[in-house]
Length: 93
Image (cartoon, rainbow, N blue to C red; front, side, top):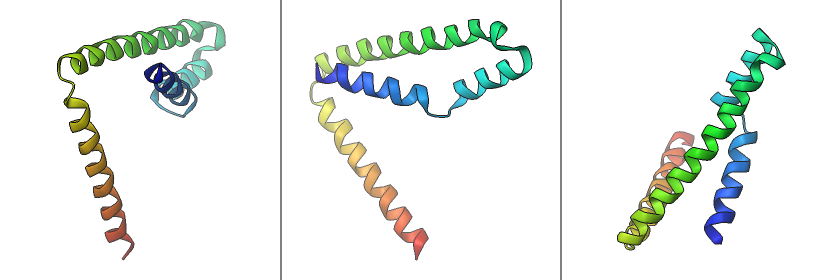
């Protein structure tokens, strides 16, 4: 259930933030009109949902076979965040 909430929040936040899909739909609407851009919008929505499902199911299988991989990914993520903070501190001085 925790994973469902995380994926749901990720899907909501990534669908409302400006990104390449939103820019593409906006440009298509501007150039071709709203009615002709609806298939593009529907394709993006369905494609993003399919991608989330496929990646979610795939990672579920990977973590089922390799449960220690979860800890490795967490450690790498923390290391990368610390690297970003250190880089930002060096740029400020």
